[in-house]
Amino acid sequence: MLFNTLRHPKFLIALLLITLIAHLFPAIIAPLSVDEAHYALYGQHLALSYFDHPPLVGWLQAIALLLGEQEWQLRLFALLSYALTLILLHRYTLHTYHSLEKANLAALLFSSIPLMHLLGIGLVPDTLLMPLTIALFWQAQQTLKTPLWRNWILLGVLIGLGALSKYTTLLFAIGLIGMLIVSKSWHWFLSLKFWLAVTIAGIMSLPILIWNFQHDWISIHYQLDHGQPNTVWQWSRLLQSQAAQLLLYTPLIWFAAWTLTVSFKAVKDNHAHRQLVAFTLPALLMFTLSSGKEPSLPHWLAFFYLLWLPSLADYLLTKNQRWLTRATLLNIGYGWLITLLAIALMAIPSIGKSFTPNPVADLVGWKEAATIAQSLRQEDEAILTTHWVDSSRLAWYARPTPIIVLDDRFDQFDIWFDSPSKGLSGLLVLPPDSNDDSLEQFAQCHHLAISAENFRFYRCQGLIDTP
Image 1 (tube, helix red, strand yellow):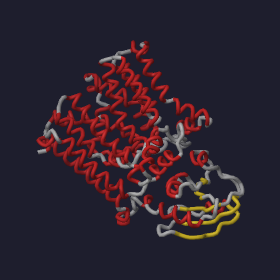
Image 2 (cartoon, one colour):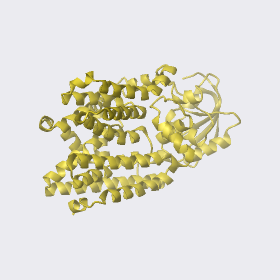
Image 3 (cartoon, one colour):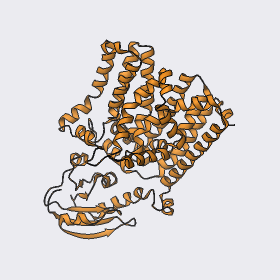
Image 4 (cartoon, rainbow, N blue to C red):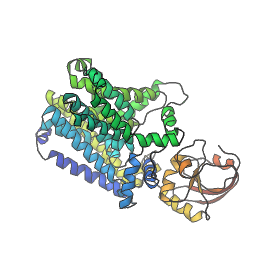
């Protein structure tokens, strides 16, 4: 029955409509997550680049803000990016395997991945990287097959767009060099077409370089240090990262992606397989090995699981074994069950109170806290927080009130507003899960209020010393 359905020519359109409807519900209702609010602030404070990421996500949010400031408007580009990814994945699979069934199955497998849906609702840099990754790899294959000037130019543009989206694109650039090597195309390193593509990508990346030059290269230093704390490498952290990926990308897709990557026979016998391994390997090794020091965030490897879906669809339909079909159906059912549960929790956070711990506790109360803080603060008084994670949503919902973060890291909030200084006074907001240790940083603090979600508000005076 599954394979009969996959033969339908309108399958992709139906899948697009189903996912769009599923995404619209939480996109309209759910409050902003910490990352979404942070990138919305990017759009409000336009710049050539930013402390923790390149500028494209902020530039797109600036366009969205021209339409309005509601949550669903700030999620428009996430919805569009998910739809574009689904279409590109379908077209790439159809182009590669000349089979509508395989293209439809690849799209269906993609729609069964819970984490991809989360990226398709909230706009973050990895949301933009999803369609760009497919387009970049596909264009690289086309360029090596048909090395026309226009193909090299388009490849350079895609690398540039990727660079403006996320620094991970640097690892993709290394992967593209790997593709040239495994394709035995060394001569292109001496070609004007190759260097034209490099030049185009470099020119498009200039905003990042200019901004970093103006800010003492703080973003570059942050990326080099990120995920590399001074801790001992441990297998338990790597296994923790893999367990999260297994659950959020579904067991079948997790197992297939890793199995296909280490399949030496496939690498030896299949040229396209070699190219894909070469393209993904630098970023895959970086994020996997570094997770032994600090567990990697699951969405960092979205590109890896996404790019293996066409090969998985080809394998499943070529084998066409009953047990594989059952395993595929169970996996798709599992993925959609987790997806619908996540969507319900996002749209109706009160459901989360039935779980221990509450998986969406961090989503609730921020807009109310910002409103209370605005009503309590005196004229020209700043709102104080202890960490940037506590600052993004307060800064968004209480805009344009300045937010000063009481930590020792110079980051985006220090650029937007100000750094803490000795003698500082202001309205301190502590979220429910924080302790009161930060009160000891001030000469005196007076408790003012507590919200329904247990946010605490203090008027603090005389910061004793800067962090």
